[in-house]
Image 1: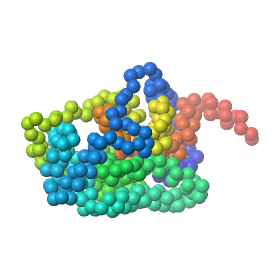
Image 2: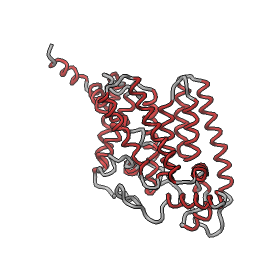
Image 3: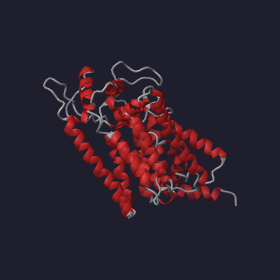
Image 4: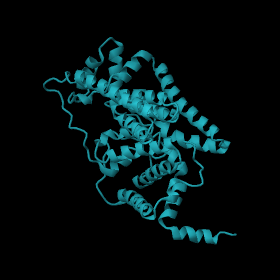
Amino acid sequence: MTEMSSNRTVFARMPSWLSRAVLLLVIVLVVLPALPHPTLHIPGERRWGEAGSVKSDMTLYRHIATDMEKGRDYYQAAAVEHRLYGYPTSPAVVFRMPTLSWILVILRFHLARLAVLGLLYGAIIFLLYRELLTAKKTLTVRIVVLSVAVTGLSVAGATDAVFWHEVWAALLIAVSLLSYRPSRWLPAVLCGFLACLIREIAFPYLVVMAGFALCERRWKELMAWVGAMVAFTAVLARHLSLAGRLFKPGDIVSDGWLGFGGWDFAIASAKWNVVLHMLPYPLIAFALCVGVIGLVGMRDGRAQRAAIIVAGYLAAFLAVGRPDNYYWGILYTPLLPVGWLVGPRALYDLAGSAFPSMRRLQAGRQPQ
């Protein structure tokens, strides 16, 4: 993702009718949350830095790991803690895959867990800085880019972040994308696969990467991504088979995850960026649009992959996810901020393509 100061974005040559449609969509998405409508209530939402409630998903996963440290099997521990905290035990997908719990038990000490999470965080900073050095960016540009990028990683510093499956998966996706090269894709595949083993809803990342490999006719790479998808599906099937045996008569059954929260829920999912957290919904909507447009506008294959991933999650969140699931947005928040760096230029090119007469008028006014 090094094309952050390119003179022209891909929107510069977009057909005028398509550019106008994109601008109209942006206007609609920004205005929509400002219109009078019922407010989306997010259970458990709190101001940045505030302590969470006694009952939370992170508390549940911390206690599961503690039970496992005492010798209890993951599935036994998960079933006991789900019932204790009033969580459903059916359908089987209510139980997270055991990967993160196993990792936490192996690391055991909280300092060791923080250190490994910090290593992932540091790897992202290192890989991004290396990209900037390779692109021969100035020190000022490097500082600006890193400062903007870390806003999407801020959730890694939240209380109990080591117990959040989404945090680990999000950092692994970021490492995967930054380490990806058409000539060296194996580390990216492995990181993406591990992200899915920690959080199942990271699976779309594998799909997007496989789709790009197919479109670019990189057959060996495609087989690797497809292999990761097949392997993950097999592991998930085994997990669901074991988790499906945990339900007992009288246990709580989940209501499902089709919340149909619409654009408000999609916007709420972006609030895990520290810059966006306190902003009103119309401004967050604008930031989302600028970020996605900026990623699309870059002449960089990885940035365009990131754009599809972010836009795909946002589209899915229009229907999928209950209000209390808004933390699912953690999965894409590390990818969004880089788009803000190119977003203004991309919007300028988009407006120029949508209204060519304005661009010609501006060109005519420039001194010869």
